[in-house]
Image (tube, rainbow, N blue to C red):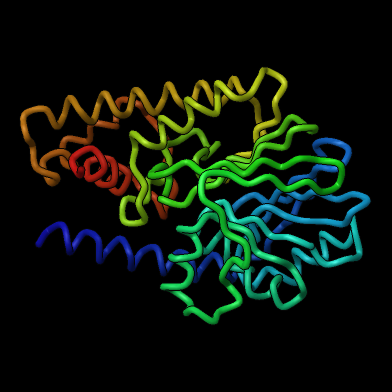
Amino acid sequence: MKHGIFLLLTSTLLLSGAAQADEKQVDFKLEQLKKNLYVLYGRGGNIAVSSGEDGIYIVDDQFANLSDDIKAQLKTLNKAAPEFVINTHHHGDHTGGNENFANAGSHIIAHHNVYERLKEKHGADSDYLPVLSFGQDMKLNFNQEQAHLWHYHHAHTDGDAVVFFKNANAVHMGDLFFNLGSLPFVDVDGGGSLNGLMKAIEDIIHKIDDKTIVIPGHGQVTNKSALIHYLALLNQAKSLMLKAMHVGASLEDVVTARPLAPLELQYASWLPEERVTTLFYRSLTEK
């Protein structure tokens, strides 16, 4: 019962925070990373932008009410509507603009599980849904660039896609990587798991090199060294959690004990320490 009350209060706080955030002015920032590759910061997930001779496409599209502003930013690079929108996963701060971009002529691409989750939320006939979906991987050859979409199962969610840009030597991580100096959101109810997330991060570290540009789902663009540091932080957090859980302590006992406190991290209002602890506990105890 306590667990249910905790989740209800958390959901209420999240909705309240989101409503307040919608009222704030968004300061967009468009940054060039390589010749044909950019990142657009706004509110929600970071947007990667490929713009070149073939046209333009984006990775993630933030919230629906920001679509017009995002389109205005993109038109400074290319007047055409994006040919494609790649979703790194199903969360609304990465897919909220799907319908608006689809109605403007964009083709949505995502993993099969993203299709299913968006269908469950918006309906089978919705323009939010991807028109192209894939299983393990997919390659998009556009703007003299090969974007390799690679699926990591049961990581942040069950539908995560990481986008490797071969020629630009860059990678868009989606929400596998929160570059905010804190711990990530493991969406257990969306098929995510802490172990799967850590396994994915380890695999990506082996796939990239010291010069790879790393675009996180949230936070500033960074590099491989920061990703290695992030994995070390996840290992520390997991170790602290397991130590607190080893005697079969209940969720309430572990939350009260604050096992993550020694890390001395800052937490966002929508993802407080108690919620991170709860999600990590559930992930480490569920099969």
